[in-house]
Length: 272
Image (cartoon, rainbow, N blue to C red; front, side):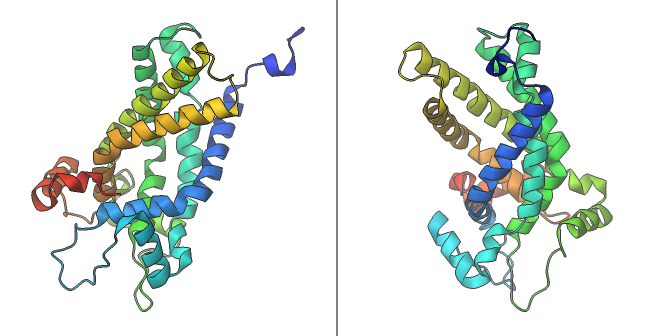
């Protein structure tokens, strides 16, 4: 490494893994209440036929957050945070940390990689990340979806108990429930997010609108996140509902999607 400045030395795979996971965890601490509100909105309406259950109606993100704080306390916004951080460390580390390496492997070069190569790399890292981190996602969603009642029973007594209970009652496959719709969702997210991020950043740099610094990365990430959310929302709603469903509620993810369409109409796919 003689003659190289410290900034010229490419980061190792370990640094990419740890950096991606840590960054995702920090972001999760700030955005987790929004994610919890999204989950509550996504599952709203699937239990309308159960007359014995008191159903809380949520209206919009702000309305959902204020209703949760009023009825369940502010801590409810962070239900499932431990599992969420576990998910970010395992999921983001693989999805983001491996992206460049996989892209270079497919493209056989570091520069001027085509769109299709990036799509393939994004889908590959997304599928690997989902398969690895699915149990943490299942537990996170179930904690977020659970409505706390002052005199009611807790769904699970902590994160570790959730893993044990799901494995005991539903088998190990219960921890990987919804893996395929989650892989589909993340393939879409990777294609729309990571690839769009690359393309937006390259367009900015090629037109000399910004230099390769934090503001440039922020603009590219904002645009990529917006595109990914719009495209992936329908699959995300199905994924959330299916992972949170009880045994026998849906035959599979496709049945969940059809049931939503029949009972609630197409707008249900954009809840949250």
